[in-house]
Length: 109
View 1 (cartoon, one colour):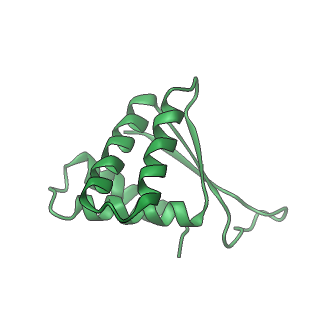
View 2: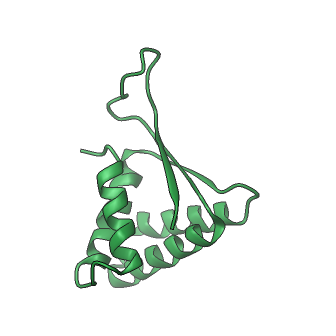
């Protein structure tokens, strides 16, 4: 799976503290991500933002070049859900690798 993650910076090239993230990738990767987010929503239906995130990735997968813009709250939700899904998985599992990628790449704390 391949994702490219871009962070918003200011005019000096420094990170904007609560800046947005742009995520690009292949359509199939976005579809996988949307399905994992749906799985996370099914596990905890109280978190409605996860369903919205899943829909964002599904819609982006239908475009010519998939691109999703996430604010800090959405990025936190994404990392949390993927972290919960990866908890009992082997280190070779795709969801584990993607969870690790996003938790290391997104500046959300």
